[in-house]
Amino acid sequence: MRLVIQRVKEASVTIDGKTVSAIGQGLFILIGVENGDTEADMEWLAAKAAGLRIFNDEDGVMNRNVVDVDGQLLAVSQFTLTASTKKGNRPSYMRAAGHELAVPLYEKFCARLSELTSRPVQKGVFGADMQCALVNDGPVTIIIDSRIKE
Image 1 (cartoon, rainbow, N blue to C red):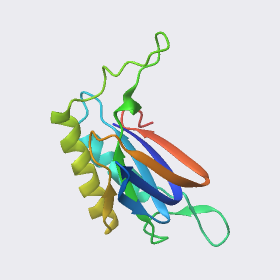
Image 2: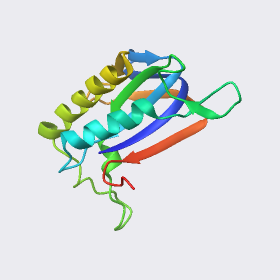
Image 3: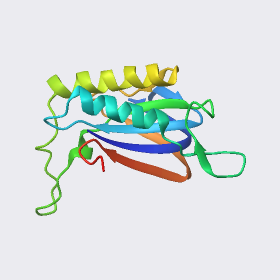
């Protein structure tokens, strides 16, 4: 599993002109699920996301997590995070997990992140054509891959 986590001032997801999710200050998280990913991968990534200290403290040092700053959470499934660009110019999505694996891991990730942070996780709609808008704060963008833990 792969996450792209962005520290945001605000973020939203719109489908067919209707806003389905929106947050203020917090984390906007894109989630890519690959074939072979497991609940252990999901658990590790949820814990990393919940504890990630990328918000400034009173000294301007990134030393606080989303809970410390009373931030909000928005998680969106994005299969294109699994793209392979090794050959040619057209990305391959062969590593992307099918719905039977990706949907449960995405839903479990959101539920586990909510448990770990004691706050709701706003979501996109799996498989929908979504328009995502955000104001990246910093900018701060972190990529975490459960297959690269060192």
